Length: 486
Image (cartoon, rainbow, N blue to C red):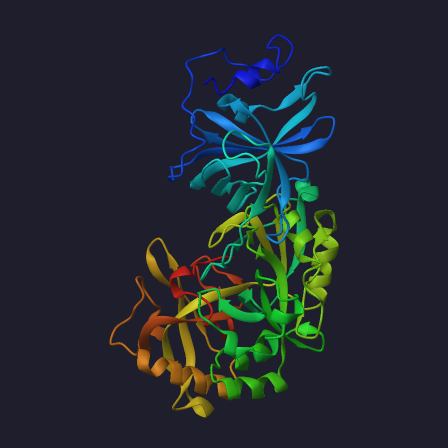
């Protein structure tokens, strides 16, 4: 049988810009196949014909098997949409976009809404199951024939269903690059505050919350006051990206968060939660009700996120501002003692684990994550304990010394650092470059496993930080990823 005979019979190649290939040898009919096959390409075309609809097409046996979707692709696995089986289309149609002239079959504008590849799970007369890998769509979809009167042949009555995918077991958050705001492209960006806290992904399933740090560590027990987020979103499945922040006098306070960050005992965590409660600031949504969202533009993800999070005591969805308001937003962030702002392209996809130029952090004050590679014994009131820290960052030349941190510590912090550094002692320097003699001679060297955050005035020509001050221990950061940012 000629799979494209019906297609050609409805079109005049001299009047429509659509591809109309000549008749060729009959293609094999794969409709009755039940075994899984590799798959192929897919395309979804938005078609402004007499009635707006979306055409869903899957490559199969040399043609595009096609369905018309009056309501488009379903977002919610609980809601199915009508899918009308139409004639097979030539493979060339996957690239078609343009205007079908008035008076011709399907007259109206056609644009490509999404495209990509698919994996085939099942294909027979009455059921098609695929996994899509597109620019906007990803995950499992099923098409079911609803006409029970036809056992073979092509019935037009189908529905399309979005499969509910499980949450991924883990994911690394997308990271921003340090830079300046592209003012000439302001309309293409959104601006968010850069919150001074701990980055965390929130995995929510059946009303239960699991928090994972940037390194993938389960930190759920550390912040018991956030458990209510699971029920707050109405028992929906969700994967959120956000920041855990402690507020003092209405402003983020990273130092106040420090005692909370390193506690795993549930009883101790509950006591600290009463003294220094935290708030989860959700600024992105990566999956919702089985629907992966990382392929959607940032602007679309924010539209989905905003009504999802009910602003409460322990969790909020912080605002996103137009790029044209960059200077005003940055001024507010500086006035409130924030580290800076983050600019995000409106059309950017979410890139798990990547440090992307589509997200740009613009800092008000210089801060840097550094690796502790040694310490100098204290003198005077610090005798017998850590006096200062020797720190470095990774570069192309290895672990390079970049500063000597001697201020910003409390008595409790010095005691905690001493306990954390004691089992890491080693006989020689872990730096791959030189260390100033006045710091190297009395140093106690340690394995480079602890990451701290410091504030400082500027970088010197020698690549050292001028007047660095300790701000906190960063157990949520991987030492292998610490490089110079500013």
